[in-house]
Image (cartoon, rainbow, N blue to C red; front, side):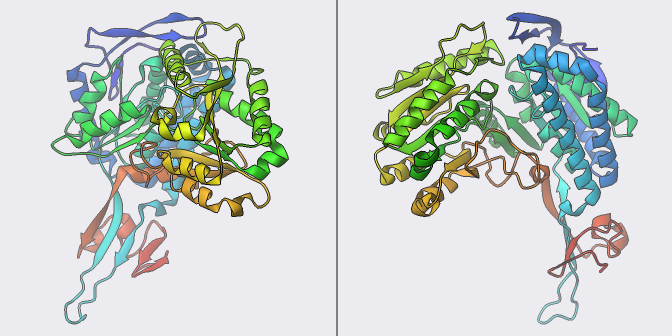
Length: 527
């Protein structure tokens, strides 16, 4: 049952007077449950509980944490139909999407559990002493990754499950040994509370310390600001806009003790369509991209918002087919009236720019909170001269940039900001003939795709979901897959430490039987 209260550790609390409701975009009405925003006292209590819990939780074994993560997955599944119903009522997204995202969420948790059980992720490194070394003796040094401390995770508007309360950031932080304070997203607070209840139940069942997880409601920015500035907080995970992510980054940097903010922000995910591909399959690729641009009402961080190619008869054919196909797609419900409003405003701003030609816009009759898809075109010269055209329009929108020649195509790619993904569509000798363009695109993105679409992010160890700024605040890390655990740890060395007092991962006997680096050699052997 949803109470509308905050979870301060395992205690439900509603001390504040500021309340709000979520919104059903399909019905275009407010939902009935009233949520109470967390007060400063509740924020402080949750943070102090997390700090206390860290002293115990950070020392839990990988196997114990794995049991906890699997229990969270089981408790989320046990929420059954109620979770799916609340998810759809707060997001406007269909049941199939809700079920798929739930599967991804529990899959992430179980993947981290397996990662912990294997154990080698802590990167244990041992360099044994050489007391007889000349001219100076060498001391015994042993290094491993250790958790940072309490982490604040911000729920994402467009992924109520997979990037929110028990999503990738939370799963990675808990796996690392860090307690988590979730700043619940106001658009899906009910979904968030249900998932929070599952995490709390799992924590109690598996003997985790009170305060290992808290869930705090908020309708604005104040709760998030207080959390980021709280002195016990050691890191932040965020998925959202450039404006929001940059504000948190600046706030964290200006603390007396600056802390890292791992923010996944805006991306237009440029698609470079090379000449031979247009010669061979212009119509096919146009149909494919009409589907990708409109998938989920364009509300994916990997939506292809920019298509780039060289002017030709084949490009004209591509643009004609794209225009024809995109208006055939039924418009979809967007997440919230505020999202729809921003989409309409941003696309109108782009379309009003000099040199923009609208190729097609849906004219179908639509209900409230539905987004009309649109594809526009601009010449490469105008794109290079107008930075406004480089910005993301969150929704079913894409801009086709028509370049004069190969040189201008390369210039356009080089002028792009950092992106999550980039795509090359090519055939035959395209990759060889345009290797400078491919190289330029590679410098701008975290993931490069060949002959595919950027929408769809596989959860696996080889996935990189992050890219050069402003796609993310630190391109060295991923927000998806078990590798994302590295955001919430730091390297720590023991020098000349008694073997019996070392962590299990660094003991001579290697009781965990993990892969370690001993004197430069990777091995599972004992020292």
